[in-house]
Image (cartoon, rainbow, N blue to C red; front, side, top):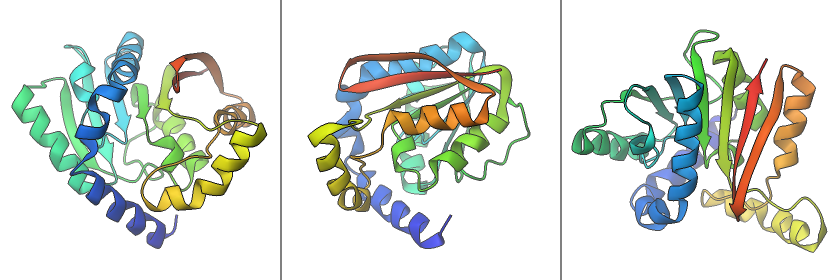
Length: 208
């Protein structure tokens, strides 16, 4: 992955760290909660990719052991403050890390959560391969995101806006089919469920 791309993302996230909670805390809460609880049902050892300011961390129940990672040190400072202020003992560690280069052994985690970040990763398939590597057989990948339209006028508009959106740390044109095609190509990961009451989705994949 290009260092320039990573640096651009870090700059965008450093700016967003100041405003992220105010914008997204209430809007995304139902999807954050469902993501965390789905992961906890699979097993206690959980890796969170793209933890950001730590909005999801409070929803992991007691008895889980969560490692939270993100590319942005500025975002993770906010997450660390939440862990301390709210006494989130389920958070076992917070680590700055590139999703495409996870510093964990194979088959380490029962579940990996990817809340509202996969559409922004410069190499999502590479990140998903790393996620699958550190996931135990029988484990699940739980992705929460807003995905773009697959076809039609909306898809065309979202594709046109895509480059501009990425510069400010958003995404408009990433489609769920990109992730399902990745899973089909691998063969050892399959789609389990898509929960989408409105606008956003929580998507579960199982590793065989």
